[in-house]
Image (tube, rainbow, N blue to C red; front, top):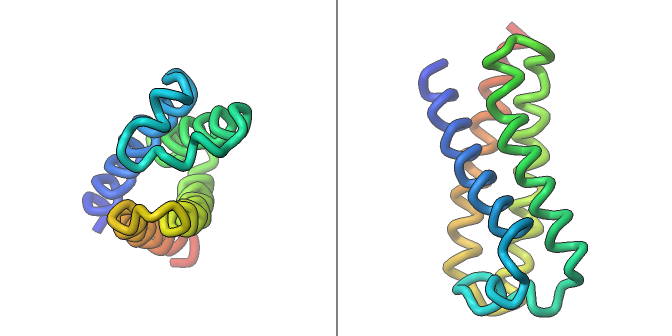
Length: 125
């Protein structure tokens, strides 16, 4: 079970890192032209960069606390935050006509829920 949780957290960390780097460092016009990024055209630049920063922090929060043993409870807390972020992402993608991306976000949400459930279980047992 521990290996599955590490794999799931690692997958989410890669997704968060990729999304965060894109939102923080790629120009908004280029993001808006990319599939699934249409919503960024109507969003404030600071909002997009702030969201990207949160995704970069999520990538760290899914891995570092468990890897270092420092405040490992932050892993499931980060996973719960990722679940909430994915709910918002699904709503945004549906509103902008990107149902396929909403389904992808649902898959990420399910993986994050698994990580949260598994890692919170470490503290209950």
